[in-house]
Amino acid sequence: MPTLEDLKRRLVAIDGHGYKAYQTLEGAYDFGPFTLYLDHAQSDPFAPPSRLRVRLSQKEAAFPSSLWQTPERRLGLEDFLTRACARACQEVARGHRGTGKSGLIAVQRAGQEILERTAVVVTPDYVEARLSVGLPAAGRRVLARQALAILTEEIPAIVERALRYRNLDAKALALHVDTAEDQAVLRRALDELGLVAFVADGAVLPRESGASDRPLKEGRVVPFRTPPELAVEIDLPHRGRVRGMGIPRGVTLIVGGGYHGKSTLLRAIERGVYNHIPGDGRELVVTVADAVKIRAEDGRSVAGVDISPFISDLPFGQDTRNFSTPNASGSTSQAANIVEALEVGTRLLLLDEDTSATNFMIRDARMQELIPKAGEPITPFIDRVRELYQRFGVSTILVVGGAGDYLDVADRVIRMQNYLPAEVTGRARAIAAARPSGRRPEPGRPLTRVTERIPLPESFALGAREKVKAKGTDTVLLGHEELDLANVEQLVDPAQANAIAAMLRYAVGRYVDGRRTLREVIAAVFGDCARDGLEVISPWRGQHPGELAMPRPYEVAAAINRLRRLKVRQLRRLADQDADGGGQDQR
Image (tube, rainbow, N blue to C red):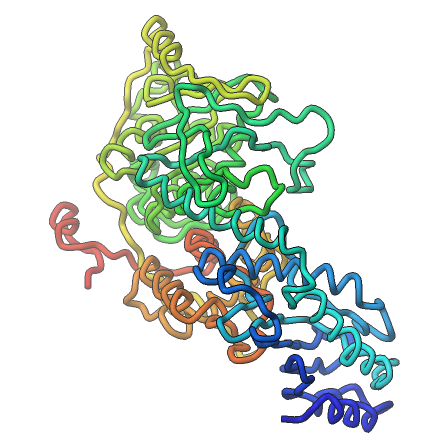
């Protein structure tokens, strides 16, 4: 293997040459304590930065095996090292030196969540960090001296600061890893306890601002306090016994006046599908991993979804058992969002009255009298929410500020006042009994099963020069089409969107075959990631795998479902065909 001295000689030899001369340096170099891999040298100083890896043996890194001996602890260690590398890059890199991205040294940035990422990987044999580097240029000419400083001085300094156990804050590292493990244990305990979510005493739920996910620290910060009726105590490996509010399975309402913390609590619960870093305030706010936030989404496209349990008998005979539209209304989009979440396997729906379509959520007695059911195609959610739980085991947590009719269908009611919860189920039931709403249930057609769909390969056809890539968390580009993910609220990190883009490309090449259902396609992709690691989906496999973070199956499905050219075939089993008179696809 070439050495550090070989790299120096090669750099000096190309000084002043055209920028593409950097590509002659690609390969591995023995730096003594670590190995440097220049996997890809950018072709132009304005192009995406070069991809570089540094690998340090565990003997050199010297991380105690207790920090990486389980998947949960290894995830915490990798996350801590990713953040340590990011700090080291900021401290060591000397900044812009030349044209374009010259002088950049960066690693994937991490937010408040602890996610599986490709930025740093820890194995029993080595620790490896994947960096982006802007190789210096004057115009489009190689600047060898500045490149030498980056590769032979700054990169080794980053390795020393961020990848050697002896140079890290051992106490902070242990806390980070222990916190990740505690959250994983707590989330697994939810099922055993019959819960869908847990919010610990002392949790800080409000965020710094609408543009920041950091915890609120200034002004009135109200630590969470559990109502005695919902108190649960759980023993964790590192925190010991913790007490908090357990939300059982079933239908739960969160009520209260405006600005008293209803939506803040729901947002914390929806983010509880992820682990959080120490100091976030939500470290012990955990939710079942398959919870899905549902909202109305005017204008989204819908392809072949059976929304008939919620909407049927449309004017002009439009079939809602196989419903498609390029421009869904609020109610039809919300119906489709629920059915699509059920299709992929959610057990918990999260809804907020503020972001829901009113006519989808409720029809009160006065409107029922004015517009008889025969003239209303919508079966409101209030008439399905208990059926979803009783027939399918799908729970709901719903924020309600104005629709008191939901008191009739709730298993429990939590009132938020001044950001503190109170259990008011008994009071709510007494009010419901004393003041009947007068509305009549409108159950409509029974919800017997969710019709699965088979995505067709032609939906994903790309030209030879078309790309699949992400732009922030809001958009994935599939060729010339933009998939709008702005309303997919549990997609929290741009690197997750990068991974969704990579997963789409990967799935199309292997599993979208016109026979597998959407759920089967996604399960196959995640199965490969579980077996071979997230980087299996990267086109750079075996090299720098790109800036990826693990999404959930539900956000990948959401991206596919928002493809405007998506074509599907419904999978209807024989029992369904007999009931419906046949005519649907089967396999």
